[in-house]
Length: 461
Image 1: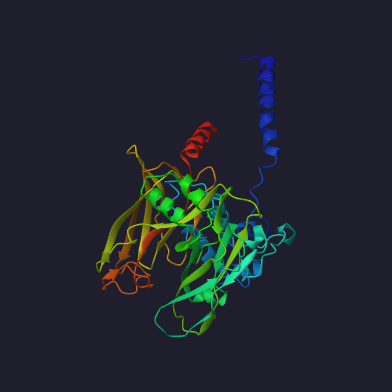
Image 2: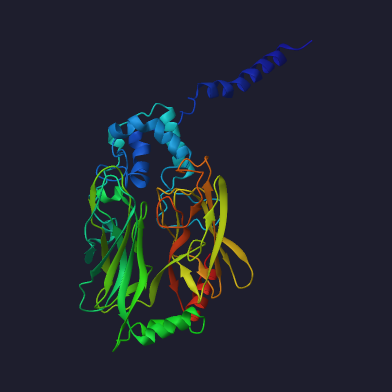
């Protein structure tokens, strides 16, 4: 038989044991995460990643500046960001270099926030939570003005009026550069007018300027691997008694590309007597539109001589080669460029037309090592994105490196942009023709600087 004391002790022990449970039951449950709202969570994302285009007077089909503008498009926004179609950033994020100074892609967390916002009914939230509005420049201003101020010099092409219905036009104009002394350019931006962006497929500019025989000989020796870049840089400063006009590719514009900002201690030398050649591809859009193309230049301060000169290169299978894409096929082609000296690759810009599907850039080093630099697995002809590497991530390439470009073109009915999969497609400048190459700014450097930068990068944590 259990004693009364024992029974009372057992009862007391049971009551005491129950106290923590009772107290715990009275504690408030953790609060649910705050609902995602436009004002607090979504507006900052739109400001950072979307409003460059999606604002009044710019390129986007609708504005995402305020809630009233964005709310009707909520479901469409959800679908586009989940498919990673918007913002336009077409690199495969699983391979190659991923550090860029102009990365507008959404993080997984940002995509999740937008999806949660839409799935919750796209609530506005408290307007007091809104970030301050961005003071965006007018749609027809140079994009680089935000960071560099107005350009020091603007050169304009002659106007061109594109009829409402017409074949593609390739418009050329040569304009004198109004300089009476040599200047180094630190940044350049080419742009059509706001209306002209509807008819301008792409535009290239070429720099014509007088060069000395010394420069031409040094350049040829460098290209043939017989001399270093030092001789070219030195000869570039020479005044020519009987100058020879040299034409070189300078800048390029296509939808989705901003300007060229050269790396520190780098620029492009422009001499008195220089000319700019505009090469513009226009196509009709059912409405008569007049365009004037502009190129803005920002100069280094007078007296500043950068150590290196930037060189605009285009390389790939469609450069200097005849290519054919059969009907109803996905075609692969390859082309390469061998570096005549050590270099830093400043950017990566794939260029194809409506059948472009994917483009891969690889480096094959003199050691035999083969490495992916970047892979555009979802190319979109509507957006010619210029992927600009972060300074410490820009590929540092030794002399003799082979830059291998592989392109894929989809000439099947599965390609929704394909105007006619029954056609044989050749390389050419028209939108219905094809191209396949990389546009890049290459900075050729000395052997000593290559070794120094290699050591510095190896020492970084």
